[in-house]
Image (cartoon, rainbow, N blue to C red; front, side, top):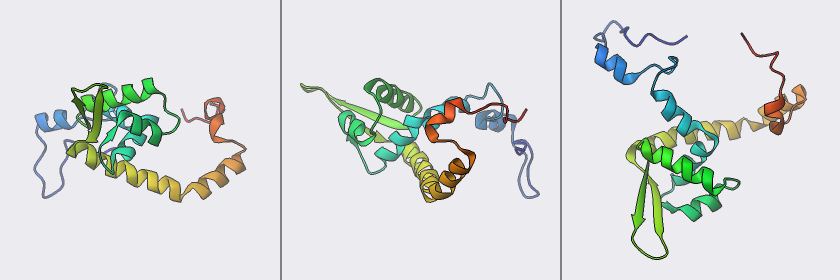
Length: 152
């Protein structure tokens, strides 16, 4: 259950309509925050954020760091994150082309939070793997898992 964004605690003033609309509600289908959430929490979005935490990187460096991503998906992910104000792209007018990517202050804050989730996942992989083994599934079977166990 999510908290009503218009409600307030005993010491808080009620949120104005513009504050409610600006914040959004991720549980609402038309919430614009969902697009940003989709971009940052996609498989490659999460990895781009984490890869850029140490500092600025060129496209080719990111591609080497994030093994398994193809050029098209990396370029698309970087464009999404740049459009959301999470990643900054800096192009140099030289031959061959030289482009660098870095996190904006907003992106750095988001990346630190995502890194916390990634750290939690890594720390809990033994328990997750044990669950996979007990359930008889492997990670690559995710798309073929039975849907009859889904709620609803």
